[in-house]
Image 1 (cartoon, rainbow, N blue to C red):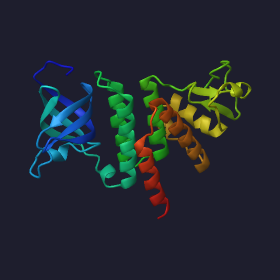
Image 2 (cartoon, rainbow, N blue to C red):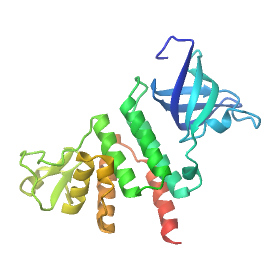
Image 3 (spheres, helix red, strand yellow):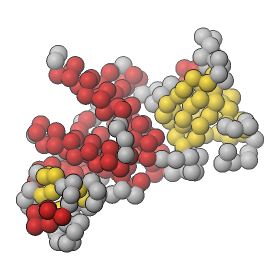
Image 4 (cartoon, rainbow, N blue to C red):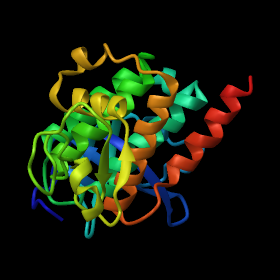
Length: 257
């Protein structure tokens, strides 16, 4: 346990929960004060539990924690932001699950990370408000990569260092960035990235969120950006991102309406 305090107030977002014992849950929480932590919520699977409704995934809650032998114990919970629009919309729920899965996979229980906490809360607020999904999700991905130390090189060739010109390029997940046409053969995993897709990724990397909202790419560009980011994130995490499959199924349902 990272602290010897007997109790602690924290403001945190519930990332996920698992069954624990007969009536408890083990929660993974990303908190403003302590970073990612695991806490035990006793009795919340009982129908009369007063805490259960404040400890659902994606909720931002104020928690009072007491020190247990292995983990903190939740003794009190109050909802700060329920994000009801996310809960009432299956597509938003799928993307919220993706947002928290990425943060969960990239982080460890190694202390506070306020920038990551703020990015998480702001992204859930934007998703809840119904803002442009393309911008909300890919701006989040790019900013999260920055915070986790995996900022992709999008302005200069990762091999020769030359400034990237206004033409189709290559992208390498192994090298962590763009490869110019003359060096394309050097990247064993290099794949083509179109000029427009690269433009929007660069736009997200160097712009504020408000500036990023100006992005209105064609559908084929959105698909290419999504493909490149999914590939790069999966490479970094060395495993499939489970919620990507959930998003695909949900979006197919929406397109079929």
